[in-house]
Image (cartoon, rainbow, N blue to C red; front, side, top):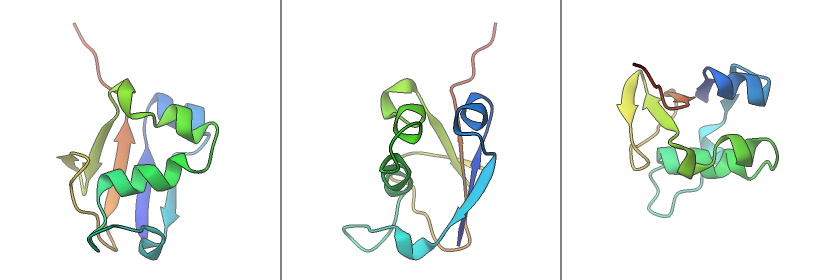
Length: 89
């Protein structure tokens, strides 16, 4: 299983802070799942998932509490977290 966590406004929009998905649900062309594959799977659920997790909104990700990009590998037992961009002043 892969633990998925949502933070800040994503948690509010999706009405959940965490969930689990089976690693076998991720279909990767080269056999190794990536953060982009997790996002693709979640966006396929339709609204509000596809709007909240749209890539052009500056969505940030972390795998096992390390900042991650779309090509970062995701394996069974990993934690993947998504959060909106952080602003400050």
